[in-house]
Amino acid sequence: MEPMIVFLALFATIFGVAYVFLTTRNKERLAMIEKGADASLFERKGMKFSIAKFILNLALLLTGIGIGIFAGSFLGTNLNHDGTLRGVPGLMMIDREITISSMIFVFGGLGLIAGFFITRNIENSDKE
Image 1 (cartoon, helix red, strand yellow):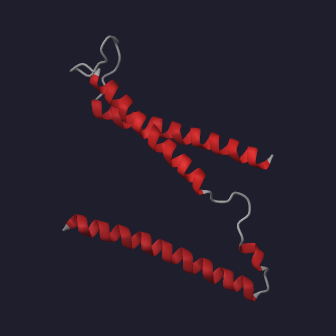
Image 2 (cartoon, helix red, strand yellow):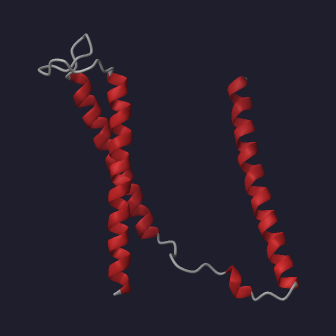
Image 3 (cartoon, rainbow, N blue to C red):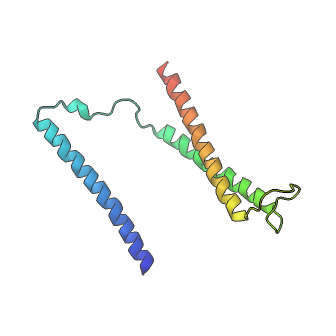
């Protein structure tokens, strides 16, 4: 019963924030139009959303997460029972769960960084 209450509270919070954001934005825009502001103020300028770039970044993120799981599992299976790495004396003790979690974040972040640079190169080549 408690998890259901938590999920309901979470979704109610998300809905409330989205509702307040959208209604406030709408009221602000209506007030600006009533004062005589040009409607071109509401158009987005600069970077436009591209589904191809989104998919590229998502694919690189998921690839990084997959590589992170693989690297964390590989590192975790090469740990001794006392938590030290095989063949590496003097390394601090590491748990298998920590290695997998940390590698997921490291490689996921590297995937996002790679996606940023690839997207930036694509945008620069589009401008030229």
